[in-house]
Image (cartoon, rainbow, N blue to C red; front, side):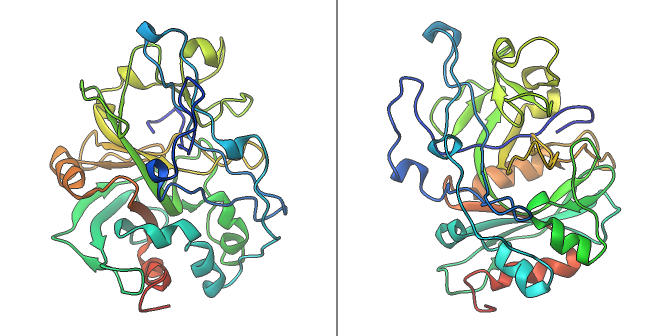
Length: 306
C-alpha cells in the first residue's frame, strides 16, 4: 500500500459464474480467525474482480465465510506463549515456505527479508540463500489488530488504518499481481477501472479489490493499475475489521527507493522480487512480519521449537 491508499486480502471463493472452487485449488488458503477482543470472529478476504470487460460486468469473488461469521472462543493474548499460539494459525501446518520480514524496532521502516523453508511440519525453519534489504511502513511496525491485547500488555503499537505502520503477524501469501499479460489462477493482472483497492472504512468493500464502478462514487482507495510500484507484487491475506479500523490492502510490492518507507506494505527491489518469484509456491507460502526480538515465535509453529 502506498501513502494515502488502502490495503487488502484474499480468500477462498467462487468463480464469477458461481461454481465453487475445489478444496485442492485453495489448499493452504484458510483464513486467520479474528476478533480476539470480542468473541465471535469474522474473517474476510481480498475480494477480487474476477472477470474482464469482455466477459461482462465484473463480479467480486466471494468467500463462503463472508456470509456467516466464523466462531472462535474469547481469547486474551497477553503472554509470549499466547502470542506464539496466535501466530501459529492452523493453516500454517500446510505451509513449507515462509517469507520472514523483520525490523530492529517498532519505529523504523528499515527491514530485512529472509526466505525460509522446512521439509515437514515437525522440523524447524531454515534459511534459503542470503537475506535482502526491505522497507515497511514509514512509521514502522504495529501488531495486527487480532493481537491487540498482546500489544497493549507490552505497551507496543497496534496497526490501524492510515497510521503508516505495517502489520505484525503471520499471514498467507496470496497470488502475484502486476501489469503483465500473464494468465492463470495464480496471477492477478491489474486492469484499468477493474482493480481498485478500497481503504474507506465506511464502505462494505473495505479491504477488497473491486471495479471502480462497484466501489461507488466518493469511496477512497487505490487505482492499482496506475501505480508504477505495483507493476510486480504479491497480495497478503490480511484480516479485515472495519470495527477495529484494522488496516487494508497489504501487499509486497516494489520500492520507491532503498530508503523510502511505505504506508504499511512491504517494499523490495526488483532483484528481491525476482528471488521471491522463484521461491514462492502458491498455496504453500506464508509471510511473517515481526520485530527482530520476536522472530523466534515462528520457530514454535509446528516445529522443533514447539
